[in-house]
Image (cartoon, rainbow, N blue to C red):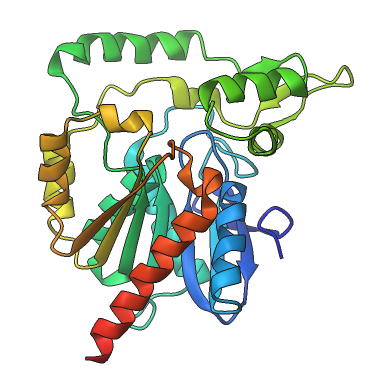
Length: 302
């Protein structure tokens, strides 16, 4: 069963949340958290690769974040702590609370930021954390604060418009320019997931609330994130793309300092891979994840 086809809806707080599922309903839950602009369907190739390695072992749970895909949008600012609250409410609904309900989070880019902060806030609820090309948001510069406040106020006077492409081919071309490492089939897949038909003329609108493009007055503060990362008790696997442009967001020294916050962390790099590594090379990413799980299982049995 594909993540694309199997969507249920849950009311989480004030929002109607789309949650995609695949795998075995009684399997070990893996919660898949996508990045900015993406949807839960973006993990479909990785799910197929995981299933081929461990048939029937996992229950894959992939929400569309607020303002993405089939989940409701707020049409206003997206405050980062709200994502953590959404994740907590989602886990309450689809997995439940309690000492036996800790889950594995597999999270890409922005999703990895959310998952890592949540794992430090609620360490008892996360047994394993796997980040995909994440933990690399640059520290905020206080000198930019005045401009951020002004842009945030300006956006409320002149709200951002949804991006609309002339047709599907144009959307495919734009995405291909952003991710030139992806194949034609992979770019076509993203265009169909990231856009929806706007009108009878064949125009396509982006399925992400344009308010995500509006900077918040409060930016990312690395020191605060590192304080939370130091609270994480889960075993952590960081998988990064060897050719990802995200490797330039922070220098090596900064990334080493961030990874050192975690008590139990392993890092691997997938060579020849860009930012969308779970889509570009799903088999390689699945192999690293399964090896990480197997290593953990062997350690627990000793």
